[in-house]
Structures are given as C-alpha cells and as structure tokens.
Length: 88
Image (cartoon, rainbow, N blue to C red):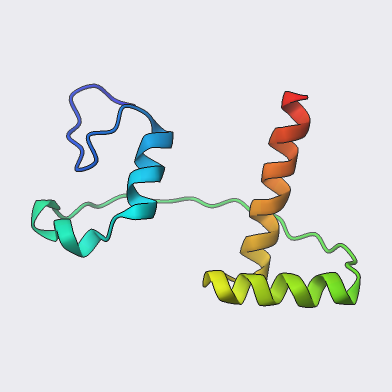
C-alpha cells in the first residue's frame, strides 16, 4: 500500500481493506469519496474446459445467489485453488 494515501477503512493491509468493504456499504461513506480517473488494461484469454452438467448447474445456482456470473465464480475458485497449491 502506498504511504500518504488516505483510506476510509483505515486498514493496514489489502486483506483488511477487503474485509472492511465486504462488511460496509459505500453509501454510508459517500460524502468521504472523490471522483477518480484511471485506465484499465485487461488482458484475458478465453479457454474452454468441459464440466460435468450437474457441477455446471450447481455452480450457476451458487453464482446467481452470490450475484456474480458463473464465469466469475469459476475464475475465483480456480485462482483460490491455485494459490492453495502453490503454498503447499
């Protein structure tokens, strides 16, 4: 994290920031925000992998409940498993 940056969360790590915002509604702090401009360059590659139809259907249900796409949920799960495997 950059020194000298202010933060609504007053967090000391990215993990603390994530925890704060997962439990906090931005509208409660809207008056403390300011406009920001930035550019984002997303490089992604699409690859297709076969999933069992029951696994795919359950994943879609879970994603819907969480308010994300099945593709997003799958990417998050795979990233999590890769991090776990690297640590092991």
